[in-house]
Length: 55
Image (cartoon, rainbow, N blue to C red; front, side, top):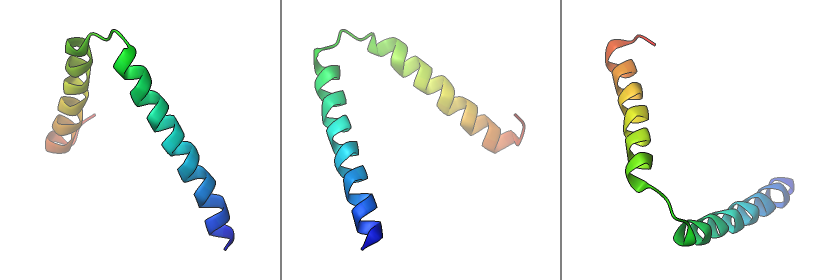
């Protein structure tokens, strides 16, 4: 029961923050090319680290 009392508010707060984030992103003027480039470089870094074992 204690776990339920602790986890439920965390889930509710996470849901509210996610809804707020999505609403803010819809109205924001974001350079999606730059965002995808950054995400691509991060993914490439993790992939290369997994393949080579360095880093």
